[in-house]
Length: 285
Image (cartoon, rainbow, N blue to C red):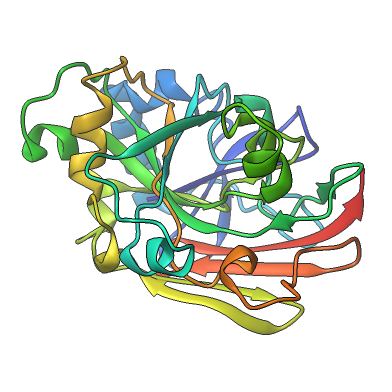
C-alpha cells in the first residue's frame, strides 16, 4: 500500500494511493497514519480491505498539499557515511560500524514543502536518502530476519545539511542537521510488502534540473536489515520512528571548488524507485 497524509500543515488527513494511482480518503477507516496504526495489524487489515474494495471516497489531488506520511514521529535516527561512493567522495574511510546521529522530529516537513536556508548559512547541501519507518517495537534484535520483520515500510527522505554548521563549528553534527525544514519526507509510506528488495532501489536527485546524485541502495555499506538490527542494540525503536539510511555520492560537499551549495531560489527534486518523488523550492529563513 501507498499511504499518505494530505491537507494543510498540522491538519492532514489520512489517504492512500490505490493501484490505479487514484487518491482516496482513509478518514472514515482510520484517524491518522502514525505509530499506533502501524503497530495495529487489525487496523492495517481494515485499510487493506478498504483499499481493495474500490469504494473509498476519491480525493481531488489538484492543489492538495501532501504532508509527511507519518504523524507524531518519535525520533529520526540517521546513518552517516553509509555508501561506499559517498565515503570516497568526502575522503573518509568507510566506517567499521554505522555512524549514528539524530534529527529532531520537528525537522520533518512534507515532500514538496519549502526548505529554508538558515540565516548565515554558506554551505547548505542536499542528500537523497531511503527512510525506514518502524512498525513494531524493536530492542536488541538478533538477526536480519528479525530486523526486516520490524519494518512497516519505506519512504523518500531529503537529509538537508548545513556543512559549515555540521563540521566547522565544533561539537557534534547536530547543528548542521537540525535546522527547520531540514527533513522533507514522503510523498508516501510504501508498506514493506511492496518493496521486494530494499537493497535494489535507485536514488536520484536534481538541482535546478541538473542530475547530481544517481545511486543505488546496493552500494550501502550497512544494508537496511543491519542498520535496524544495529540501532536496536543502543536504543529502543518504536512504531512510527524513522531511520534515514545515508546518501550516495554527488553531494555538493564532494564536488570541486567552487562547491555548488544551495541558495534561495534553487529547486531540488529527488526520487527513489517505487517510493515517489519530492520537489522543494529553497527560500531564506
